[in-house]
Amino acid sequence: MQDDEVLGKAYDARLMRRLMRYLKPYRLEVVIGVLLILASAFLTLSIPYLVKEAIDTGIAKGDSHRLKILMGWVFAVLMSDFLVRYAQTYLVQWMGQRAVFDLRQQIFTHLQKLSLSFYDKNPVGRLLTRVTSDVGVIGELFTSGVVAIFGDLFTLFGIVVYMLYLDWKLSLITFTVLPFLIYVTMIFRKKARESYRLVRLTIAKINAYLSEHIGGIIVVKLFGQKERSFARFEALSGQLRDAHLKSVLYHAVFFPVVEVIGAVSLALIIWYGGAGVLAGALTFGTIAAFVQYVDRFYQPIRDLAEKYNILQSAMASSERIFGLLDTKPAFDNVPGAQKTEKVTGEIRFENVWFAYRPDEWVLKDINLTIRPGEKVAIVGATGAGKTSLVGLLTRFYDYQKGKIFLDGVELKEMDMQSLRRNVGLVLQDVFLFSGDIASNIRLGSDKISDEQVEQAARRVNLDSFIHRLPGGYRAAVEERGSTLSVGQKQLLSFARALAFDPKILILDEATSSVDTETELLIRDALDKLLAGRTSLVIAHRLSTVEKSDRIIVLHKGEIREMGTHSELLAKRGIYYRLYLLQYKKVMTNEKISA
Image (cartoon, rainbow, N blue to C red; front, side, top):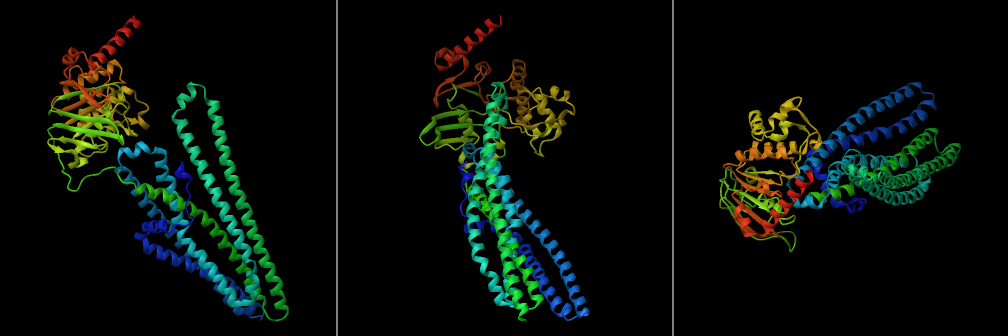
């Protein structure tokens, strides 16, 4: 929310230089666009002068031939201006959209590189705003701001030059209202800046509120909180309405004031210029030209006021975007990182310490060796550090002390992409993408054939369910797999992991939310699939790890016990107490069912 409140400067040269880098690949188009804008401004400003000549040398002198020639020139200028404006508008929009595309791609690519610790601290909604809303504001600057400002400034300069050329005394009389115009513009700029801040902050609050309450709509309905939820939204919506109305008020005052100042300028022209015509010092054509130039003079001023809002928004958005782009990953591949296509699966932890926050150790002095093909279970109470342990193995997070080896190579010396190709991870909370069943198994990999997809599904006992779906493997999967049960989603995630054929397989609470029938299907699949693979199984249900080669008991970040199921029960330690606690729960549930 604080990021959305920050406005920064109305113009920041440092940010603008960075923004202009995105136009650098299209600098030829930018130059042509500026030249076209200048040409359009010149053509537009030529019309009042041609009208003046038509009045003074054509109508006043009764020269119909010259009048026809001058009107022909006016028509030619109008047509030329139409063609120039068309080319300029299309070119600038094309250039702006290309630059926005490049910026959006850079942001998305950068987001892919950031470590998981970054996403732990930054809400998804805020990151979506950077890629969508903030990039859209930058696009408006590229297409309607940067280049168009040159046209407005050149138009103002050209009008002043033409007016001074026609009659400098009348020009000075006309410009006497400019101090008032400058004063009004400064007030408007200050008020508009504040109203923009208020509108943006209120929009951010509404977006956050909507995201939270739509995501938690089940809880809202279940506990009868609809009225309270609506009342809160109504209050936020009212704040946004009032903020918009305040912004509209400033615009509603500023633009009519500009019109009044323009009307005063026109009155001065008629008063002083009319006296000049009566005295024979000025011509009717000059007065007519001045009237048209004054009318054109205030249009770019109104446009520049709008450009100020665009510039203000763009500076705020660019500061947030560049703040994101300047965020470095918590860690990255070291120079010359070793790439490994195939591993045997030997894992070794040596005196490993890990903390999410400084000095708040989640794992303490972990020493563990897992042999190739060994099935190791990791158990412990909630918060013991089980998931953190496998998070280090996949290099989602970086350990602060000690070393972790895979096939004798320290993980920090390995290329992370090649490391993760050899590790399959199945989580308790399965994430599915919109698409179909097959695409969610192969995840876009062109190395996995349809036959391999179907084979993976069969090995985890998923194919019978898939064949019952309309379309089979091409059956549509809705957002986050909303049409599938928890068990079906977890079986699909098993198929996904196995399709990539990893040498190391990690199951993180993969059966904790599955019904008994589905769990039996998974157990049957695991007995066949884990053979020949190094596997780490994290589970709360101790019944799922009884057949493991070894069981590691974590307690408060430390390895407290290690052994087989029978060995640990014989020790009557932490594992024994956990097992006894779950056994009592099972017995209690059976009595209740009876």
